[in-house]
Length: 452
Image 1 (cartoon, rainbow, N blue to C red):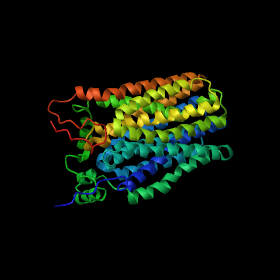
Image 2 (cartoon, one colour):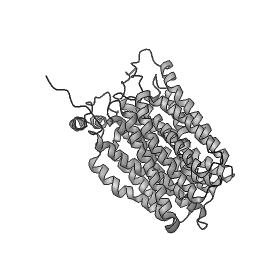
Image 3 (cartoon, one colour):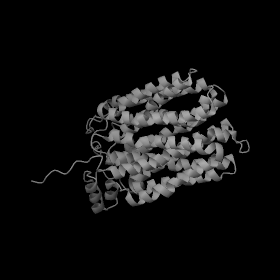
């Protein structure tokens, strides 16, 4: 009798998850560098930055992220994970170099747009890789663990802004954004495995089986392999609106919109909102590090909780708790209390959005996973476009309280949207459709819906 194959564990897939952690760390660092140096950019009188200009450029960044997420999420299912990860890291490193060299605010904005293309493309690919390689029933925890790196990168960016910005200027801080191309790209090229499903779709069956065996994945089948060519890309997008998904898809997009409005609005404008509330410059920048520290704790708590109770429930509750934290920050709190509230709000805010991502693979089958994640993150990037712009408009009006109210309303919208996903999936199923297991994540990737 053949002994059973060894189970897939965190140890067996540690190299893959570790590489994803590293590239997302640099993603978080690059995103948060802008907010970390924002006070220094605004104080650089010769550069021509105003609060409205800063908000507009922040939206250029997230508009680039929208394009990157939509493009890469669709392309990666047939082009492959590894080349898209490599290209994304190169793009946001190049954008950071352009910002460091920028002679004007317009040129700086172009650099942030280029960075956005790479930053937006990387996230859905990393999420798809983690969803595919995560141990059974540990997908939400694996997603949360990977996303701790985003906040570690945010803390690193804040530390660089505090350490280098006052004495060396904001340009030096952006030069540190070139490091990912020098460090991460060689490691990805050498060590990141390709998806077995993508390899099988390309006719490389032996390589697909080798990767699956090495990382203890199920053997890929043609039903799970993405269809190649332009027809395959259109089919993958159309499948997002198949029976059982056609109502869930726009709800996931709405929840992602609300979550990313919060994430990028807060990451860009929290220091200025706190400064407008009466806190000092150094304290205001430190709030960004504190909220990212809370984000790291939140990812660990949310991941474990979601593997037990479901990512949808955790995301909804976390969104509501974020709304409570935002309302508390409207008050003029003592500094120590403000730090505590910001930290706790960080626990809920960032992981509420990540649990939307963690819920997504339960809605889509393996052949549509990267496309589904790409569109959830990509359409959600409209919230990331709106957040920095809206924050700039609020700060320019001098009303910090209105900014926190706006973030609270966005959190309530996210809670409502994600809560409705299980309901509409039950009511929107085709009678002849074989349904995926209802447990959100914590399975081997869901059933494949039969073709009609």
